[in-house]
Amino acid sequence: MIKSFEDFQIVGKDNFDASVASVTAMTKGFQTMAAEMADYSRKALEESTKAVETVMAAKSVDKAVEAQQTFAKQAYEGYLGEMNKLGEIYLNAAKEAYKPFEAQLAQFNGKVAGK
Image 1 (cartoon, rainbow, N blue to C red):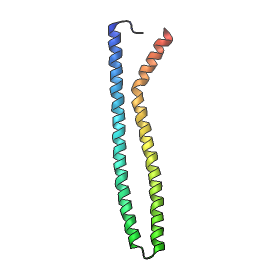
Image 2 (cartoon, one colour):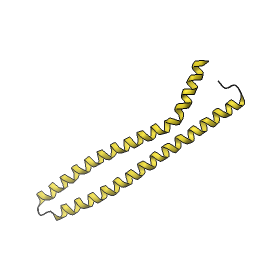
Image 3 (spheres, one colour):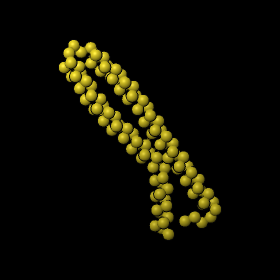
Image 4 (spheres, rainbow, N blue to C red):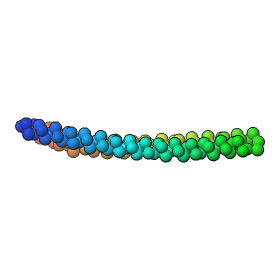
């Protein structure tokens, strides 16, 4: 395992470097998620505004209800799609954050197995 103080320092440095790389990957993932959520919020607000205008311009109650139902369906489907997209972004960020530790884990397992 660790045979000297230099080995201990190397392990510490490797752990620190892996941690920094991992945090950097997660930060990039969170930035991507924030940008995606801001874009979705902007689109949702625009669609809501259009829906209100359509409902207010309806010539009858039936047309107003129909417009509102159409909007609700589209908003729900858009929300589900956005949540799936955010889930994928988070999953990719988590995978990228784990990558720096994979090599260390393999190296550690090799040392333990090779005792």
